[in-house]
Image (cartoon, rainbow, N blue to C red; front, top):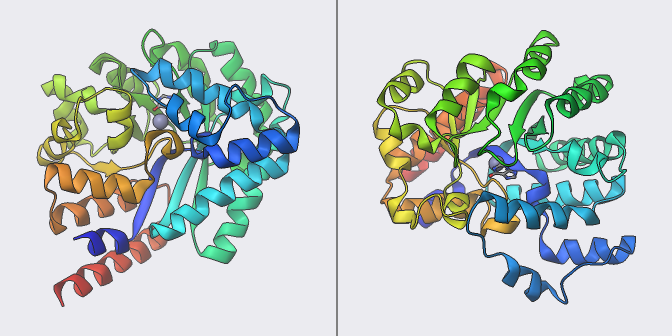
Length: 336
Ligand code: HPA
Ligand code: ZN
């Protein structure tokens, strides 16, 4: 089973590039840029990664991002993630980036996006991993700030596939961002949104009916609302579930208690993703391994999860067909 999981062709749809900042790179960039860190060592950083909810994580995550200053920093960050992808047989990845985390500190939008996209272009050429970029608005900031961010991004529109919504969920419902998502849709961007990670099913309804999202990021709280479960199944709205993240942020006590398998069994289009792997103890391969073990997933479940992610990706039908073909070959090898 371990080998089957390792070689399963994967698509990752919920990954914050700032959340791939490993402590080693954090220290190297702090030194390169002359940034003071509130940690004495890499071990010290890892020891600080004890979270009790989303906000306790976000405080540390935004502090860590302060070492990212130059285009080369964003390039190095993204390149390191893509090398992890290669090790995990990730064939396609859709990456969130949070421009406001950087522009608020005086780092230009161009610095952020140019570093990430240069690494993604090199990654496709050298590693054969395709990718998309999803611009996320920080929901703890104002709707006006989100609109300003969208306007700043428009000159780079050819590099941005979709828009998303992340950061502190409770008290920041999707409806607060209606105007910016309307504008993004008018500009031709598909949308996704974090909803139902810590927040109630009502936030998922708002993301679907108000923001008109194509996917829900997390969405695990949908289980509390049978009508919502029916809607998600009927419209085949993908959920980008992040099991190890949910444990680290205490959404579930133990991985054995996670509802991923129940969501699958209810007919929802569930996918497995890593969210912020440098902070949550594992990249997508480790999320698959740990979840498969805890919930006793078999080859059919793994295949379903992988195919769901292909179907949920913002890819042309030919590229989706190619990836399904890779999964066919994986399944055939398993049968031998
Ligand atoms: N939830 C909300 N915002 C985030 C997350 C998350 O899991 N990770 C990075 N920003
Ligand atoms: Zn997330």
